[in-house]
Length: 344
Image 1 (cartoon, rainbow, N blue to C red):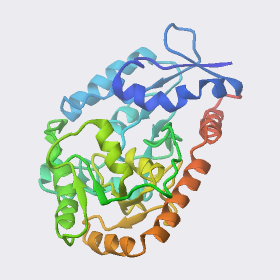
Image 2 (tube, helix red, strand yellow; image 1 turned 180 degrees about the horizontal axis):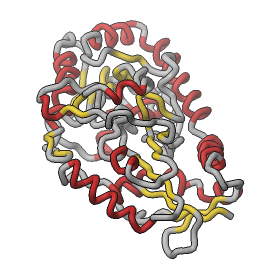
Image 3 (cartoon, one colour; image 1 turned 45 degrees about the vertical axis):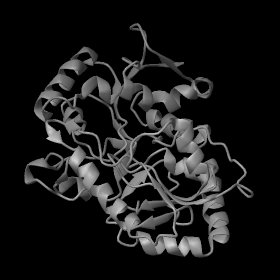
């Protein structure tokens, strides 16, 4: 039995990163992998980003702190996990390069790895640049051979209930209840909330230009109780899910659960496993600046019942095929077997 230690599992971002694997611990055990959290009797460690990354510091101080933390694993086998919801490698790749980690695993990566070598705002290529001081790219000559996909993302582990929607009341046309404007937020001394807000402002501006007869609900008036949030979503025909600090969000899957068509900015720039976004039949994509959002909403509402059946059922079918525990376990199993000396 291969014993994998996950230290500091109680840290928030660590827990969410490893949750899909731990929820499937019984199946991992069937293929010879067991997870432990304490003690020194283990074969390999999985180290989450909250243990080696601190965004409240400057980038250089965060990296130095992360390298110092990893000193305790010197001479042992370990893998670094970066479970952020965005494809940026800022803060994790620098630690990885100075470590003895076998791999750096990410939930999402850019399809074109060349995107990491060009300057973009905090490494997020979908955010337009405001300040040149906030631009980032990976270190020169970066080797990507040991940077792999984790086999999970922010839709992994979501309880997926396929509610019947054929007779559901759909008296709201567009559900756009996402955080806007963004709460004040800093990463490595950079105010990132302004980029978050500016990206979503384009979406809100386009929604405000829709004809008056199209009923839209937004969260501009503030946060509402979770029960009310889902009640409004279930009454909606379309769910608009813009990018935020990352591209993927739970509402992407929740839209299909309640029988609503998902609209998102184009997702071709990322690779992830599992991936329901690779098939354009699962959702409707729009330009990153949302310039075509109004025309797409109008088209979907014109023949809504037919469009609903098409997109919702395709998404549901794809999710159930892609997000299986067996696929996730097989992904990790093969990755560990690729490490020299491991024959589980």
